[in-house]
Length: 171
Length: 154
Image (cartoon, rainbow over all chains, first blue to last red; front, side, top):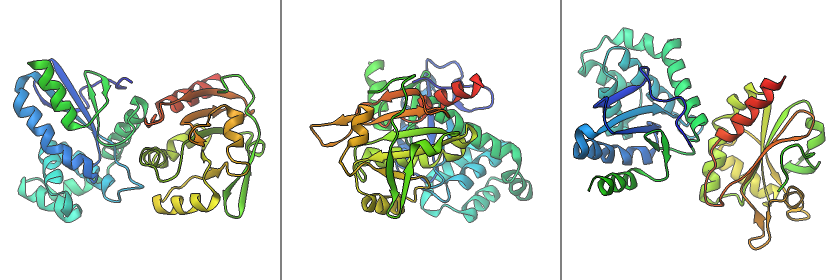
């Protein structure tokens, strides 16, 4: 199964834009497996450095996880003030504190405009981004979270399998 | 396994302890049938939970989804409550697996349904079918592609 649509300028991209390996995660901020994958993805980025480009798309399972959607909105709202990855990381690192209080605390810590952040969280732009990400996941064959795509193809395994695969192909 | 362009065999199955659903009466809507082996087994739970998140998107294509397994209506009721599922699960329980067999997706060895998807158009004709490896959650991309094709035809 292929990634649809392909990575573009609307995506949040970390690392070398011209990297040989493009890694896309579909994740849910309240999902325990995504929380467990978070440090492993970091390790992949540290180990492979410039060889890897990392993209995150939202796939909130709102029926199963009541905070998944607002957490996705919070990260996207922070993105409008240029701090997507900071919010993304903070949420995964404090997954057990998920809630509005955590988001506001982070917004203040990052020195962002709190009122603007709150307004953005409710804006159509941010909601549409989250919905478009979810739809792209459905169209790409995402069947749970986290789901990874490597160079546009679905990767059949979790973050540790991914690490092992990259390790093997680089050695 | 029944294929595209074949008529979807009619059935009447329990969707809840006090409710039955007949396929023929659903004409005018696109229907997604998701056959799966059993309530409570890990992959299926993921699969049904996944579809539970997508009901709004299916609805955009005038489509309703039904899960089907050989579990009883009482087992389905407990499973639906436990996973907070917002769509019906049909009980192919008596005679066991009869509808699975009609659609060609019964696993005699396990006495369960295989993992299979059907998209049925508004006239009751199969528009798309897919047999998934038993341990693999097939996701929804195939369903959405089929629904999109149906919608474009009109």
